[in-house]
Length: 96
Image (cartoon, rainbow, N blue to C red; front, side, top):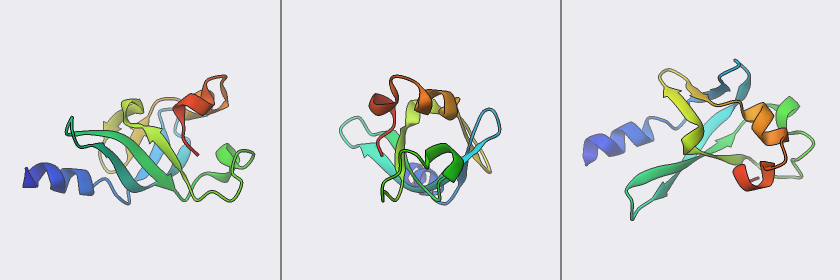
């Protein structure tokens, strides 16, 4: 289990980009479901002001669902965050 914990904590501090190449933010923390032993979300800070300026009202960051993650390497790629965030179901997808 220690190897899994090391992998999870290694996500903190990585930059997150949409698969379109747009910078989204930086991973500040990880949201976990302890019962299922699974990562459920990424808490992002240092957000791209162009993406979130209209919705940010003194908030420090957002939590994006982990199911959006496409790839993890030196950076983290997520699915089309711009389109999802600006869409009709934005409130149900990203927690601000």
